[in-house]
Image (tube, rainbow, N blue to C red; front, side):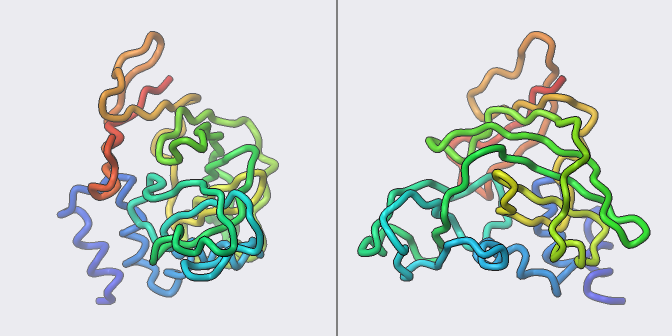
Length: 223
């Protein structure tokens, strides 16, 4: 029995949620762990980026976030104005990357007959003030989104990518909204938010960022 099979056999003993699936993928696909490294992803796609200690090329706005974050939820991510001499603003274990603006998408694919088929796509809305809190996700009726060639080579059954203005910013070896794709609109509900809204129903979906979020997500309002 392989290590991956042992891990998979143990999964029913763990209280598994969609937000734990990056950890599951870490165990199932050890040969693809580099794709969980967000600095590696930025470098693979040719973005202006660098780890803590490497100065930015010029003064501008950059997104600063952990190089590795299996907790998801945008933990630690923020947009800062950095100058080349301000290397102390990027903590150890973090990296900086050029900022993209425009449409933010979460896109799910499933692999069949050695080909990734588009499963769903949702547009997310958030703000620079708090990158950990999306205001809502809206399902898109579009199937013209193309998967980059280098990702087509991944030998996994499910794939999720996040893009901003067509630029891939995250790669996950699992799906994102496959368990909720019957809904056209998904509004995250964080601690302290109302759980009722006319025309919507509440569904559970706890995510704490492994204790890093001041206001954990408790679920969603969906319709």
